[in-house]
Image (cartoon, rainbow, N blue to C red; front, top):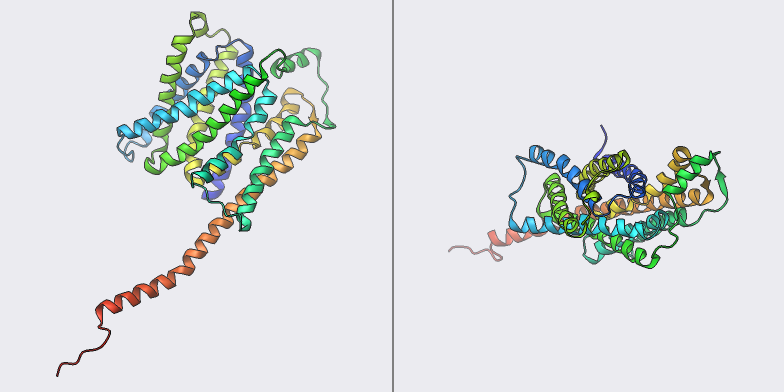
Length: 363
């Protein structure tokens, strides 16, 4: 039997495999000329078709009552986690490059950690070794992912490619020449803030409303309504709503079913089990996966920076996980050590109420 903690880490690792594939599918979709407003609408409609029946049948008996306050929270989750997060990313990517966008995304764990500490959801004790380990772990993971995307170094592996293969790869990972890098950088930073805020917001919502699939389904529903309304007003060309190629259809299916559907449901489960910081600290792992997949699948060169970055990311993950486990162990030991004292105090208080302080003898 796989333990609960092992399931959590396996799920978080699996999520990064899914996100690594999404970078490729999304780049292909953008290269086909898909509308950056219509694509998220179709993507989230696909996800909602998957999540709604699952939420209805699996949580039918245990689902808490949906109040107007719950609907407001779901609306805000859709606004921050879908409409703003996906919108900022698509428009930011269009004004920069996948390399720059990937580098910006690596700030999500640090931003999530900062938000969680400021909102007192995550404890941080810099006077203890576990608190220092968590800080260095976050910094190492972010730094390692940044090294992979920004520093190449000497070539470790260089596959032989035909001319048409190189042209295809260049079309997927083209540079952002002639684009507004300043605007793109601002939009991508907004995307990272929204992603971090969305993770922390889900943690707070789950405290009051425990039906995870229902939260994901309603988040997706409100994202469709919001993005659909924006697209209906701003996308005037009817041709933009048509699928022009099989690549667009595959990209929508993958992004909708796998990313907005399956991984969104798994992510909210990991947040409920491990907290927002642990759920976000695994994000740089997808940078390693992309670096390892590229030479095999796409024939890209593999550089020394990939090895250095991978070492830092894995070290950072270990430090954060170790720091959290030591923190949990410290709290459990503290509770156990205080239980005998509380028991003696309760016994003392109880005896003083039952027996008089000075015995009285009736004459």
